[in-house]
Length: 462
Ligand SMILES: [Co+2]
Image 1 (cartoon, helix red, strand yellow):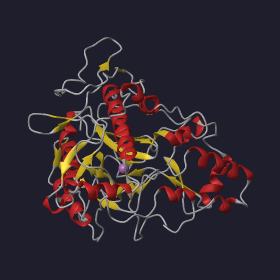
Image 2 (image 1 turned 180 degrees about the vertical axis):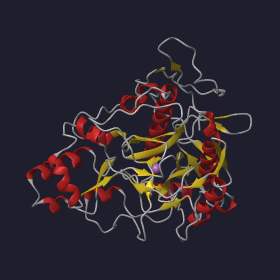
Image 3 (image 1 turned 135 degrees about the vertical axis):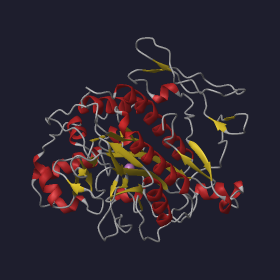
């Protein structure tokens, strides 16, 4: 989910806020986030011939029609340690990850070594100490890796069914049903959605709609066409650890260069990310790569532009947008990435103007954590009851009308207007480039661990 770039203001939480939710993201010194690189206690990891760490046994995919699976093609581990053989994922995906990985050793993401300047942070003693003081421990990595594996397994299915003729509601259902089954949280009982499941409203944005569109209950059905460019942006969270990752589907190969531009731009952002990395430098590098591409559409050569008005962002616990932003265009900022940060590195490229406008419609709602329930003491009863539903089920997670209906509230709840106008709840709407333009997006979540960067959402697909 892209972070809307604020105009001339610094966006971020107020660390002095007395809200209980803020206690989940305590201000921390710029120190450690994770564990030692390599083998964690009790964790089975293998190395291939080149010394690279490879994934633990991956579950194979069982297709309903009995077709052979491609999911285990890159299995190359030479196991000597005893492991429980995981059972198989189904298509559509419905087997909970807890069942596939009974020992909770979820595959790690792509490990990227830092440049030399960080090599001094290597004594295990020091790292153990830093990990301990930082609320980022075994549980943190386990939850993040689980959420990432759910994302990979669900998107594998989505990529299979995202063909011309499918509706946006069918795609959203496929994503949301898959994520809920695999995290093991159906989000039907009060509070269950806070334990695991959707990290934010499922984004399904077509063509010039860059971000923040989702099918709403009762809305007009939208069908994927051969010439469409569809951004699929969804989040999975486990205990508030949100994986934010997106890809673009374009059935017509004429958009190949547009997709190549955003893939290369996002990979550049990931490569440049690191402890102490200057965000201004990363943004400039992203823009340079993105704008070196051009697309030919209807015999016309169109330069790919990096989109303004959206940014990559850091992610906090239960909070998709933290206080740091990574624009896709050269920007003056002295902000740096820090050890322990989690970043969503995403880029958007367009054949249009690159400047986004707000469009009508609702993508989702999110609790403003700087306000307390006291701010609605004088609000209508309907607003107060809705706020209780929101706090009990979503906390500071951004949610859609579909998610609200799932917990039994009306999607056009009477109290919502009052909560939005009083600033207790923020409302997010679609962001669009000029009509006739095409926007593409790729996005990964990366953990800046003490000794390495872990691109947690990396898969065989992207
Ligand atoms: Co995002």
